Image (cartoon, rainbow, N blue to C red; front, side):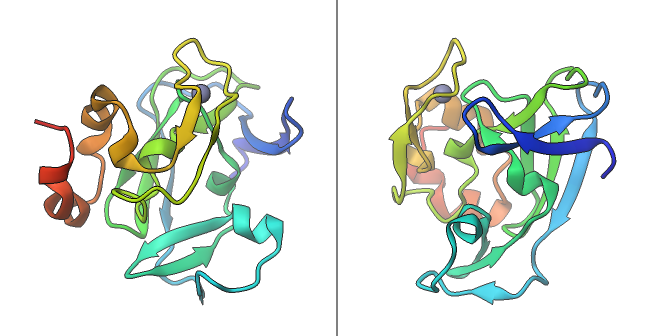
Length: 169
Ligand SMILES: [Zn+2]
């Protein structure tokens, strides 16, 4: 984990930054959340804990402070998440990333508890040229080309369940 640095961003939240140049296609990390203690969705959590909640399936959540959990959203991200199962994923560089650059992924297509329901929505300030302006964590609310781009990286169980609802054909 020496390749990454957690520090404050311009927007004064924490973010994850590359400590070395990373090549397109490189595996950044593999995560397995299945053995972390579960938290109930209605548990009383600190703001910090809430920001680090992650879904592991069957209505269950965990809190993880692994470096991946510090990555912020971008509508033009440099990291791709390949979900092997709901609790296991791999993070890959989607482009060459320079030392010092912030690592980001797309929150709109990686909240696996929100494939067809919108639990969270905010104005997006990611600043990229192709910013969608509104950031929703609901997969089905994303533009069709975004759904198509990320569909194959969803876990098989989710693809099977939602295929007909998604604009992916
Ligand atoms: Zn944006």
